[in-house]
Length: 79
Image 1 (cartoon, rainbow, N blue to C red):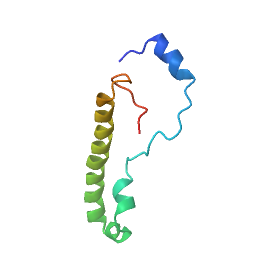
Image 2 (image 1 turned 90 degrees about the horizontal axis):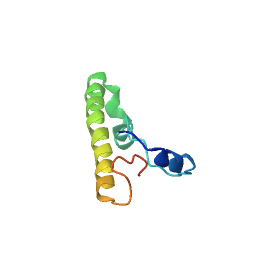
Image 3 (image 1 turned 45 degrees about the vertical axis):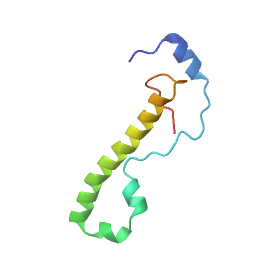
């Protein structure tokens, strides 16, 4: 994906606050009990699920950009 010089010049001065939450590696740890992570086998399995859940959250954000016709197709700065 190549960006035009116009897009780069426009985005250079953007002051974006609240770009959303970084979901990678934090969803299950924040929503489940810490007691579950005491068993190393179970923690390993939950970490594998964490990767899947994090990618699903990112895909939902990507779908939101496709339905928003006022931003470019691969716009990454959405909540």
